[in-house]
Length: 463
Ligand SMILES: *Cc1c(COP(=O)(O)O)cnc(C)c1O
Image (tube, rainbow, N blue to C red; front, side, top):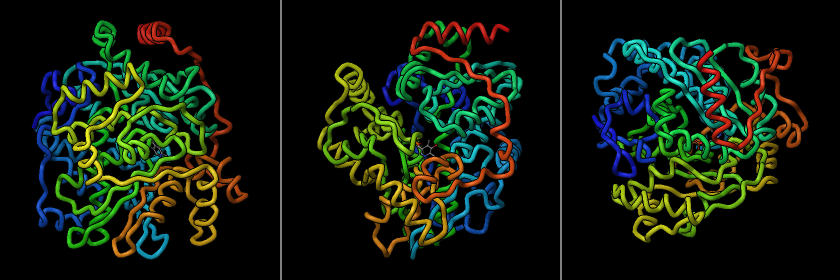
């Protein structure tokens, strides 16, 4: 099993190297050369298994010889043992044939824990064996940062730096990043938007001297291992509703296209998915692109769903790669146009291919609050603003005869101000975070300046 870059000119890597690297050296993203297939009977067999066992069977064909079976199963078990819910990713029925997949029972209350807890364990085993140390730098719109800090904090062979947009994450999100006391984790408040954080991160990866000097590793959703971990819950939820004997649809609140791309991989593996619906907030570049064929950046507008306040959707490059029949040169040209002209037009053929798999919708700020309020009234479920965007789009688009699963991406208590605006109550934090507001914060401010960030990283890892 080899991994190839979406821009066609980086070396092929095994799973282990692709995981430890993150971004390819030609600026592209790694994808599997071939997508492993699961037969109807392979998928059927999952329905009697628990989450960890399903995770093992779904991910095993992708990891090659990186981990032996026993070690890999131990890694999975360790990754999910801190989850608060026995089934890890429970389904709740909101309306007839419309289900919410609750992905927020992990340590930092967002779906990011599913992938981050797993790669924390995988990094630890792989680095120990190699006798190496890495520096992880990550950009976050709010939830990746705390998930990474929780997964890597205190591990021996890693230092972790998190770039988050100053003043643009919720207070709960900020405190989750700034209060952990581990010496190897550093939360950096950058003056700018999430897209600036992501751009500086990419700059660091493209500066090979720095990259090699500090052994840079990336754990954003550009890292293939993160996508892989997220493929699992598409299988676990679909089989619990009767797949593969019937088709299931999914709606995914998305910004960086990571979570929904995992659904696309599940479909490519053989899971019968009828429709994959992209749900965006007012930062609707994905919805506009699919509607018009023009991928063009706008200004980022802060919203109630900050984890989706994104204009450059990194993982969309992976979908484009397939839509352009895996022509890396064509993808490299589109990405160059994005950088120099702020956008590009997709060919009619590639657009048709994307529309075969994906449909889309966008939700306004008022629509988000209304959906939180109405869902609370009808079902008593309190949705986080991101999940509400998914539920709203799903209700508009779904075929009532096909079960629809909307991904519930975060716990509502991470976004108490939005919930209060919508339905006049502040959801309580779960037990394990109940003293979050009494914990002491450590914050470092940085400007949107590559040199400044690089020196800070070098100084801190030298300590
Ligand atoms: C990260 C995040 C998203 C967006 O996920 P992508 O994989 O970037 O599309 C949606 N909701 C929440 C709560 C998130 O943390």
